[in-house]
Image: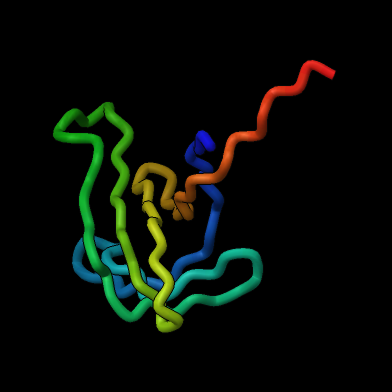
Length: 93
């Protein structure tokens, strides 16, 4: 089944270093709090172009052992949970 990316707004608790919102420590999605025990990977999208929308991605592991992809958009100071969900089949009925 084909899947598409869905981006849902979340609240994130961070370790704020010298660059601001630096490392996520926990997040809340649908009223459930997930404590992050490990950042498995981290990367940036947007390059050096100052007009490009930059995103900071974090692949994280929670204390329950779940793996999530979350991203921070500095321009909007907002966090989103990135998930792939099944695309509903088109019906002509």
